[in-house]
Each structure stands twice: as structure tokens, then as C-alpha cells.
Amino acid sequence: MVKRIAVGMLVFVSMLGLSVFAQSDVSGTWNAVVELDLGSGEPTFVFKQDGEMLMGTYEGTFGQADLTGKVTGDTIEFTFGAEGVGAASYTGKIMGDTMEGTCDYGDAGGGTWSAKKGG
Image 1 (cartoon, rainbow, N blue to C red):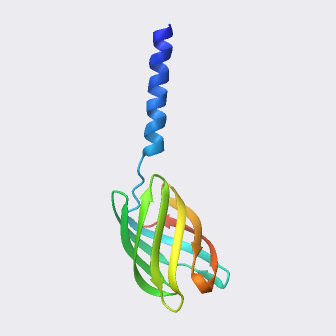
Image 2: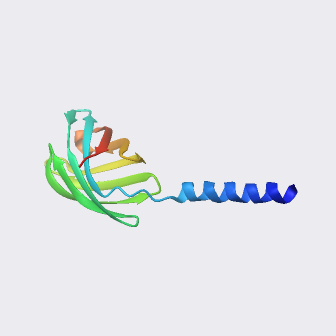
């Protein structure tokens, strides 16, 4: 009986560990909605992920730009140069085919964002 409980706990802890360290893969096109202090927009992000390293593009109100960042577990962070406002930085949580978080556009202000994986 004690052996069964120990084995059961070991399996549970192993499964818990796998879910904590599971790496999300965000590669693909994401359609976003961004709400800033100055207004809103609907940019498109195209991500290419290699391990934790993230590369891709932004296309939206502030033009087009290459982006770089990282994915750690279910957390995403990335930055790009936005026309007229300098660097933009995003941080968020990945939840399968959706993600959401906060963003900072320097002098243009900050806000929130959400995105859904497209085709």
C-alpha cells in the first residue's frame, strides 16, 4: 500500500513538473488587438520560434518592423522598433491559441494586448 502511494505521488510530481516546464511554440501568424493610452490598433505578428529564441515581424499602425524576443514556458516577451515612437515592448501569457498581456510604446504610452493565432 505504501509502495502504491509512493509510486502514485512520483507519477503525479513527474506530470506536474512536465506541465510547469512545457515549452509553448508560438510560431505562426497572430492577429492582435492593442489598446493604448492614445488609441487602439489591430496589428499582425508573425513569429518564428527556435527553442526559447523568438524572431518575427510586426505589421500595424506603427509600420512594419522585425521583432526579437523569447518564450519561457507560457510567458512571451518581445520588442521591435515602432515608427515615430521608438521601441515597443510586449510581455504576456500564452494560453494555447491565444495570448494576452501588457505593452509599452515609450512616449506613446502603455496598454494591454491580446492575440489569437490565425491561419
